[in-house]
Length: 214
Image (cartoon, rainbow, N blue to C red):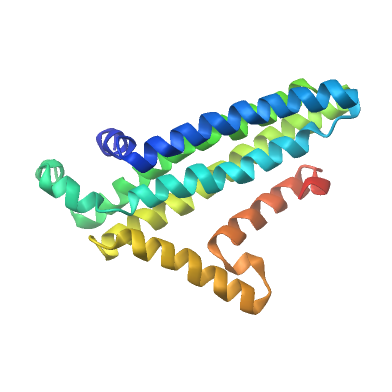
């Protein structure tokens, strides 16, 4: 899996996601510092962290999943990587699972940077012990959401590539758009891929007593 993750990380989209990850982390850190300095202990730093997490899903996890959907099988076959994997006992379905795991690993690493850094910064800016405990729970909820989002999107990206080896990116985008259209018609955001993931995040926020941030 490590080889597949390294190769995926070398794609232009994955590199763009890394830049976005660092940019979100830096911007969120600055915003938390500014808000804390301006409003004191009552500063809504947690809302900045939650926003950074949501943005990182769009600019990091989805972008890496998009990279995972774009001709990974074709590229691996061309470079002899697939043949090497097949020689070691992997079949086609297992290769799809390995590519999904590689996408999850890479996207989790880079989405966790801004999401985790922002929530940790918000925790450090806590004004009381009670708030500190709540922010610690927020860190846990955030990392659980990052894992769920990266697992779903990584699997969707790898599956799109498997279904349409030369048009996987189109399939991936269509799944997102069609699910969003269904959600709009049904007036239920949870029916879309991204809306469903954000609904999970909101549920986690309520579970840790941070429902006001949902």
